[in-house]
Image 1: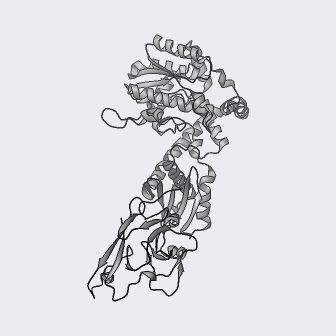
Image 2: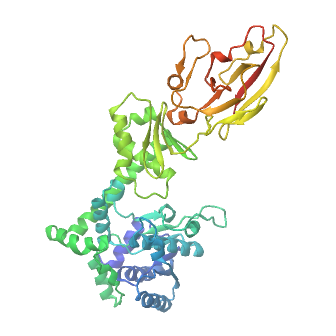
Image 3: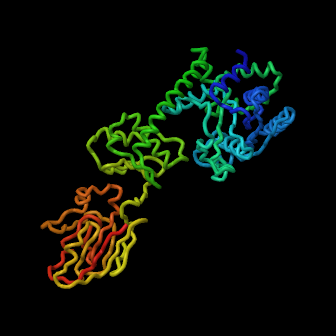
Length: 497
């Protein structure tokens, strides 16, 4: 089957470009993008497509000026819309950990997305082909990857799903704007040339007398992809001349497998995960019952949910936690286990928590530094809790402290040594719980009460002027809080949400 019929059929089979759609085509002037623009231009009348060429000058090569003029003249000759802009890729690449290749990629996709948004175009088409797919798969394999990387580039992917983390937020804003109907406008990135080999694309250029511009930086083997293209891939093709076809088919097969697994894991995520600001909670009992591959995927998803800008989650980031779970199947409390980018994992009885290192839960009281509790008065304990103190008097024999009992309420003798302070736990803290004849370590009491480990260092303790613990707030009162039977007044201190 000739090139155009194959392309038409491929686009229809995979629903890459809707009829009557406006399509932004990323054009560099090279053979791949030139072939894509020309072929789509020939198919456009029968499908009602409105094509718009878009070229980004990266500011890296002097010949880019000539390429920009070439694309503009070509678009004018074919009566197509055209946008040409410039980006400072070297400035983007000056950030730590951002290569020139990656900076150029991110700048290009942001540019194409912005052009598409301005034109209300639902589709951006780029010229990646089967040989590019081979290089992508090998790059991921050599760097270490799971199924998500080994499936290669997708035929279609939402542009707003790309992690353009090296760019300023303003450069990504257009991906998330709303259209006139106040609905999210999603731009799809499509790759119609993925089934075509480089040789077929070059042949198309010759047959149609297209004169592409050649990017000499593609010959620079200091770039990882170029080393693969010019040194490694030719050796592999010497072993298997059908390498491009074989790996392209493998990528399509793995894409299907990935979609099936991803659907399964999305269902697990909906069932098991609870999202908060700064924390993801995974049901620990259900998590332990999963296969390790599903555990790894959910843990990576939790990291990505908290750090969407973090592209490379390494093997070590997840395996450390999974090893602990495998080696200690009965352990319900532990941590912190360092993950990446300021995140930690904790075992918190019912939950496996993935959270910010300085996360303060809203569902439990916490305190960072000692604070005085005025009598009467109050102290804030985190975003959603407070400790409220007031004086209460009663008639002899009424004793409201006998009727009003709660772990969130304590009654203190009116002559308790003041000032009272609320402070976080310290190493070696002990207390004699009300009703016991011996002291116990606060550490042991927290274990008994199943207070989550990440909350323990900042758990509030109420102490008197001599720093004696009166109350492990919300859990256990001290013998020092015991009222005499003939008391007619006390300090009533309550933990309120």
